[in-house]
Length: 392
Image (tube, helix red, strand yellow):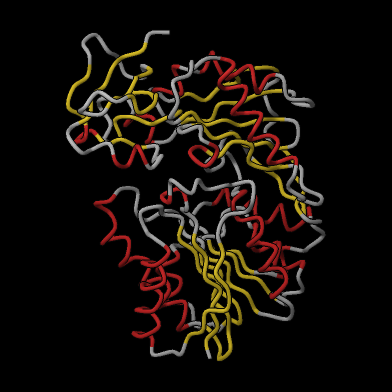
């Protein structure tokens, strides 16, 4: 496979020497002629020292994503080793009663640009970069060989593909086409997953342990699940003994799936509230007081330029949620924006509590489950932040 030489500007090799996997376009001094997006590159410092190999996209702000910091071939053997390491990690994770998990978590598994989720006997993959798309012939076979897998479905309909110069790709790439709905199990709960039309790969696997925590604290409570999607937190709270659950979601299809998940778990949807509304409006207009509110919004900051606006959005929904809580009530609030650091998120919640004039205690801080590892060299990979708070 052709490899292109890249030379960095003076003193711009420090992040690479610290094993950070991203090289921004502004750090590059020279790229050899005749290169294409997705090419494997050999990265050198301004003094000519070899730093490692990655893949190139000169049209992206993150111009190079590093695959290795050694001089080794990027081929089937390379990917077989990386996938083997990822699969061994999951084999050692005790996830009782779960037939769905993340098998490859991008930079967290040292495979930038690739996400692989397993839903029972099907894999759903997201190939988010031109380099990983170009290298697909080298790594797809590692997934084909997994025991018990009937089919592999590529679900790439996000904006990130367009930024990489890639077309939308939604198709079965190997084996059987997955059914319209796949039933998964999670700690005694059941969920229907729509891998074709659902968000991301179909379900938010990264909230598994947080759903378990919500279930443990929901007993006897009146619960509001804002940004409910297909009701993961709603079902968890119901099975944890919540007396009433209100699920707010702007998508009618998601709310219908939420009601179906209630029935799948032996709960009567008629005993609860399903509101198809904008969460911001609902929090302002809803007169009901709650004992537990779950706020799990989509990523408000999808780029660095969005951070200030996103911070205002997070502050607003948290402030309004605090106003809807009974004394002693619990707020389980999240941010999945990787541009919002844990420290900034806590400051935002502090500002909301100050403006809402409530005394707020942080009871627990949460993050990803163990099948979503984070590389210690890539702190940006810690995108999910959770705070379980109590209004004193």
